Image (cartoon, rainbow, N blue to C red; front, side, top):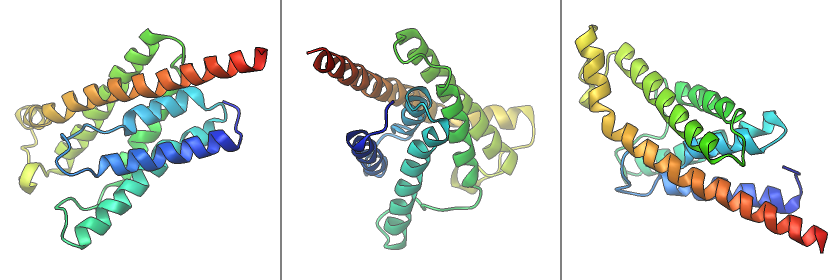
Length: 189
């Protein structure tokens, strides 16, 4: 992706919209665009160090907004909490998965969506189980049954993450394909 003024403004707008979407009240748990953004950025942005910026900045802005809402008693979701840095590390990993997605291959995009959400689900919930705190801060047993319980409780989040990632990847990669095709037509004319 050639970085020009319009591209920069488009990416800034994308980050702001995704950040605001993530804090919408009563949004289904896990239904957010950040995994799709990480995959898209990894796939599309040629300078890989900048590809990490798009999803991480979106996460940080929405976490900061959550924190402001939390401090003012408008949500029960804290923006910043202990161990949160792990989510940022996981999003770095998801962006790396995007490096392997061919932006013009529907099967690569769907495959990347499934791999990204699945790895995030497995890693994040393993860490929840490992930390010993689950829903309502009740500990999961340090056993096979405890980790299975942790994964089962998180299944709605996982399913919503898959739906959201496929939807938002379709929007992001589809819009990119249309814009690229339109730009190619204009440069020929």
